[in-house]
Amino acid sequence: MIEQTTPAADGADTPKEPGFRIQRIYLKDLSLEQPNAPQILLVAAEPQIEVEVDVVVTHLGDEIFEVALISTVTAKVESKVLFLVEAKQAGIFEFSNIPAEQIDPMLGIACPTILYPYLRSNIADTISRAGFQPIHLNEINFHAMYEHRIMQAAQAASTESGSADESKIILPH
Image (cartoon, rainbow, N blue to C red; front, top):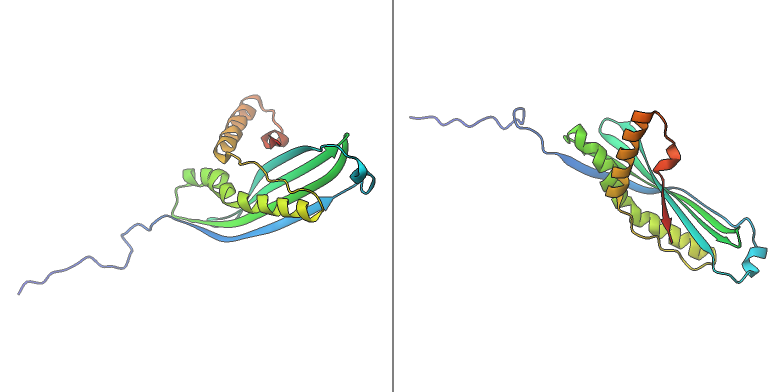
């Protein structure tokens, strides 16, 4: 009689599959200001819109990160603020068995790309509920934004000068 043996299926010798999981997506902060109302509402002029977007990553624990998209939308009429919306859309993301050199690009590109539609929707809804035509934010190339941050970090390291505000993207509207 010949016995056939198979390797043990205890998983000790087999490498685990890499994994990426969205634990939660949530609106962390939202504010609307209309500092010059009601007088500014009587001015019949087209507002100038400025949009700023930034990405902030917080390490929460072993392979768990919070990624937050922070945006400020400012509308001005005749150099006075019509409204100002500040929003922080966040998500908790879990990485497992992903090489460390791949996690940073995922945090800077993939996670913000997942969060951005939620941020756009919340901002448009808030502006609409304030009585204005909703502003739909343009698409953002988070890969280009990430590459820009890497380039800025390299320049800052070589010149030892840099500002945190330089990493923000200001979108024309």
